Image (cartoon, rainbow, N blue to C red; front, top):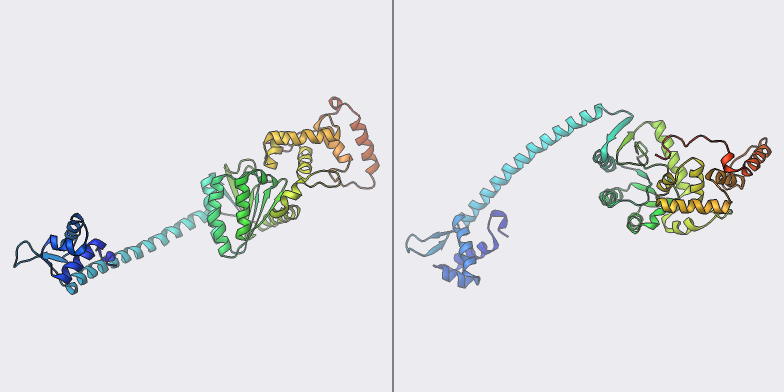
Length: 369
């Protein structure tokens, strides 16, 4: 109990034995303390250094203990003086920290408007951590990519726990493909146990995090979120992003039932993943682009595409898209005025050799980059 004033356990026992038994030699102290003589010698050196035990003036070679009301009070006063000096240093450091925080905040806010550019993964993670710690009501996330790497999972855990402790409502949408990655699935289930709402869906447009409906972070490149991101604060854009999330949330399945819903089929016999592939192919995505959107391997994406083409009896992707639309697999909305004309045009195209079909415009910019 005297360690805070610089006295070890061994030194305390040696001092107590010397004080209470008026011992006169190292051998006597060793017998009283019941510890090795080397330990007693070292503890005795500490006691002499601290002024607790002194050589006898009257009997050379013998030791005598200093009264505790003198020796221990001196040690207490010395430690209290050191503590007060440390407290003054900490108070000065606190003032300096506050000044640096104010300078940094002013400098950073000068470059902020409704859109802030974040360069590199370090800056992105710093801003996510800051916004998460200041989040008070809600946090929503779109998490594409399927597999979530270990660094991201590790970095998110303390932030997730902090949000739950503050009562922030958290909702996250992952891809159905997380069921193929045990580590990511375990993390998602941990979030559910923590109290978060987690759902999955076949495909997602981009990674997105929205804090309290007031700030959103989106990657500059949807296919490589580590290169940089934008932080948006504009009310109009935030309203659109929130609406997008709500639409995705309604389409997604809760984590507890997602595995079953992921393999269930609709009236056309299509799973949600197969419907997503047809939509992505119709938008011009390549095999690589489709795989990224689903969070699966290119090989798996090609297998799904080949299976759909076989079921549709199509010889090309374009023909597969036309047949899927004609069969109602894409849920096209047609007006009554042009429904017959559309059917006639589709039948004509379906009967053509794919090589004779006119070229169509390529995918939209960035769709398969």
